[in-house]
Image (cartoon, rainbow, N blue to C red; front, side, top):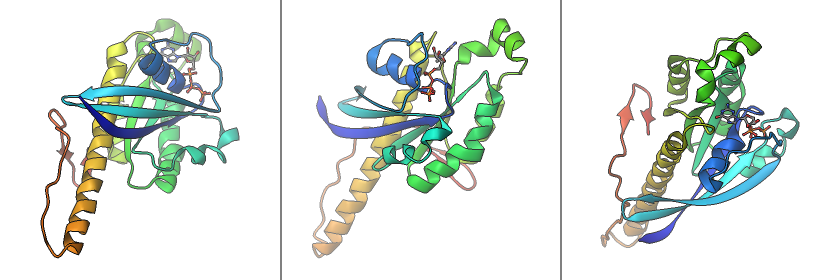
Length: 221
Ligand SMILES: Nc1nc2c(ncn2[C@@H]2O[C@H](COP(=O)(O)OP(=O)(O)OP(=O)(O)O)[C@@H](O)[C@H]2O)c(=O)[nH]1
């Protein structure tokens, strides 16, 4: 299996929304029961797409405003950004439109975004509902926010569903590979033009299962 494709995925979102748990379950198969605030943390993992193994470099960031000035150090060369929020805390979805989209657009324009609703298990958790006295974010609210970002929307529970986590990294890996294959096509076509239209072949990773959904003003991957 080929494994020369490398992708960088950066994970952002409000403090305690579930970023570290998402990465830890995917990369280390381990759900962190105790909360430990992140400053920066890197993980590596791989994802097999048909005949292609993709090496993933995963960047965990702090959601704290205290680190707003240093978080941008994570963004250069990102192939995809996961913007996360906590389904049990609607204010973390508000931050997606008020803060995270602008930060991502400023520091990595043209990078694929995915909106990820974390802690799906808490949507129906009665204890959390009575404790927070808040109505959790519905699927439609998450989906509509994602539409405003021109991003796909996925939900997961790091606590209860490894499959939901895998689906997120499947989608993110496809987004990275599609971006890289488009860039390499552009580079090759520019090089071919320079070589007096001498022609050449363009290799692309198999993108079976990768859905393209067009909307009026944007393509949702
Ligand atoms: N019930 C439930 N709890 C979760 C889930 N994911 C994370 N948590 C808990 O939520 C708390 C915060 O999770 P983290 O993953 O550390 O949050 P973070 O976004 O990395 O936080 P910062 O490092 O402050 O940015 C921890 O106590 C986790 O155990 C989930 O899917 N379900």
